[in-house]
Image (cartoon, rainbow, N blue to C red; front, side, top):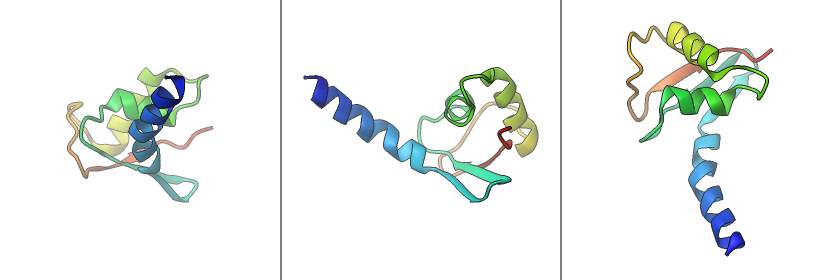
Length: 82
């Protein structure tokens, strides 16, 4: 049962993790998929030491977002980790 649950989680999360690209370490992006939220993207991108709320604010500023609404296929610039 645990193996099935683990495999199901890997199928669900693997595509989201693959959506983060980094041709240049300073130029990291995330391609929005159906169901993604800014909170999800921030949690995937931020280290455990960083408050995701701060990362959400940074993502909104970097991308000129006035709302938290995202659209599938939208490419978001992500703040550099440091």
